[in-house]
Length: 291
Image 1 (cartoon, one colour):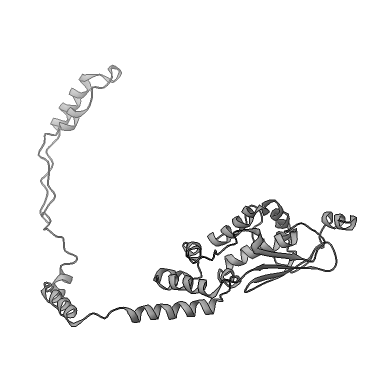
Image 2 (tube, one colour):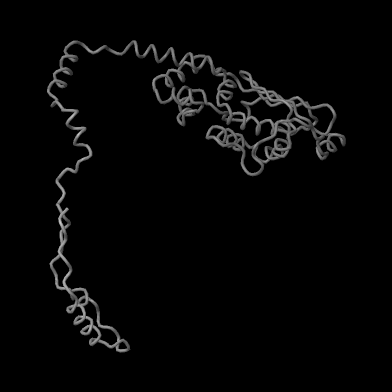
């Protein structure tokens, strides 16, 4: 490496306006399970230390453009030289038979289809790809073809690393971008799933006449309900309430008897005896009135 290349590695990048800025200001990048998994896989492929070099670039907005197509991700990154660098990350498109196996598994579950329509990737998706013999994420660094026009010989360089971080946040916003990178667009995938679900429904047997008659017999045996009478009783108590609340027939000094003896400073037992005589001298309360 020439001294110009070493100077390039230590130089500060040219600041730009209107670049793509990572939403994460500190810490890990990625909020969904698939984007976090993507970053974790990259870091596990002996790229963790080199990836962090591009985190500052991603957060400063040095990435000017980012595009995803089947099999390749491209970006334009502004470095310390006037001419921005061109980045490409290739990841082979999955074979058609693998996609058919994955789509068949997805079409078999209504929950999977609902999650995809809601813009979410099922948690079982990575396993479905593995079962089809085509991992969703790269399993080795050799599967990724990483190129940058910068003079840095390290792979990935900070420009490629910044692209990876912004790509993870792009997957947060639209998980179908991850599937597009692997070879299926959103429109094609959802159309295939709809066709697969319709085919499965056509193969389901239709209930025969005996089943229908059995269902009708069960419905006929159900007791009839007077809806009008049920509505009239809705706000009534299940059992009649008593005309007046129950009362306790107890002597008026019962409460005083339950009290513990006061301390000697307050008169001791003689205080309770004096209170008891006072309670007994009180007049009887009048009986409760009806209604």
